[in-house]
Image (tube, rainbow, N blue to C red):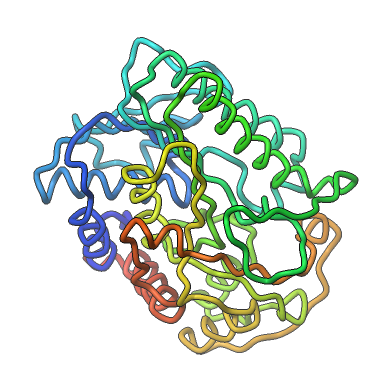
Length: 347
């Protein structure tokens, strides 16, 4: 069963859609088949079909078959844009909004394709910004990452904070290119008066995760659902802010529609702070499995970030009247429930 037809997933989509302050418009979503992009597209489709909104949705991706497989229910309100994000957008097609979510977004990809990761992030940002330069009324949001903060002494990160990144480490290509992308968004806003905002995402998880997602929590979920032991590659003491994909998407829409021009916002749920070991324990408990420890291989080690606590301050996002709905237990429980619904074929 396609995820769109899961009753739990549909219910959560409608809850986000009901709160959208803008009820129409042409919206381009890059990286549309990914963890976040696909949920954004599904939310807009749910709004159109359940609440009578009038969004025209453009889903951008490189693989037409992949988009057709992910969105088999596409109708006249959803069109596919088949291209690489580093290629120019069709300036004859007008978008009111762009959510730029195209990027390599998992550790194995960073390790295997470090040059591609950097170029996709930087040149993809340029593609979006050049379009906005031609269409001044278009508002664009860049999905960035908590990793742009680098390393500094405090565990809690506010939007104006910054820290060190090791340019000698190829793994830094992902956060460094996201930093450059953010700076490009700010620079175009300053120099060309483009209307842009930035959403810095925490560790996002949910049922729209791709099958080859190599992030630790994605591996934990796959193992738990398969009834297998959950493997920890470290002691799991690193603490992060996690965010269920529905909270991430509602936060993105809040920043897109209400964020101040040129500003960056942390998108995270303050009720979902946990160590990696606590995430593993939560998943194991819900799936009835156990936790074991294992030594990572060399490719996995190259994709790992250096151990460091990273808790995102959310006061700035909350000032836009946003509040997260899913703590860690609720988000993980719903992820498991939706994925089991899909696997069983129940509607």
